[in-house]
Structures are given as C-alpha cells and as structure tokens.
Image 1 (cartoon, rainbow, N blue to C red):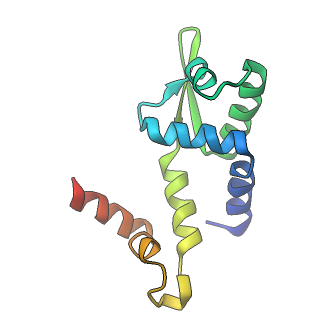
Image 2: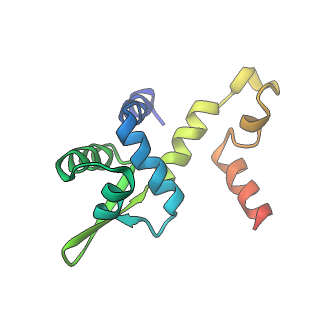
Image 3: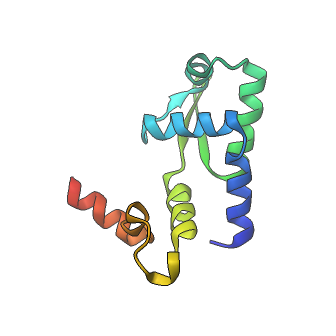
Length: 118
C-alpha cells in the first residue's frame, strides 16, 4: 500500500461518524447491513448518512450493493487488512514491542491466526 492511499483511508476514518459507520459494518461481517438500519442504529439523518457512506465508498473502505429499493453496505475487509498491514509493517524495526501488533503485522500472519482459531 502506498503512503498516499493509506493517508486517504485514515482521513476518511478520521471523522467520528464515518468511523462509527465503518466499525458497525465491520461488526456486521461480510453480510453487511442496509443503509436505513445503519441510520437507525447510529441515529443519523438520511442526508448525513448518505454523505458519509459515499465518502467511505469513494475511498474503498466499504461497498454498496443495490437490493431492489435498498442499498446493502459491507466493509471492504481486504482494504482494512492492507491498511493494518501497512500501519504495523516493520514495527519497532522488527523487535517485539507491541504484543497485539506482533500477531498482525502482515496480511499473511493475520490470515494464519484466523485459520488457527477456526
């Protein structure tokens, strides 16, 4: 991941409402949740929610899929995975310093950890 791409993703998540939306979608898992349910759960007006959903979609952190009259949103776990790997890559020059980050400093390590727990 390029630094500019990471900066765009972090800037999008740097707003309280967008971070709340993204965390809700992460909790929902790959199945995601429809826009009206997101608005209800977070208490956001439709126009405000639409603005934030569009921003998160534009940077690639979430994706929307139309289902008749509704749009169903889900987190882009691949983008999240890449961002986490970028942020923790070569942490502390390879020295163990952050126990929680050590297990996830590369995409391969996170995926291996997930496979071990399932």
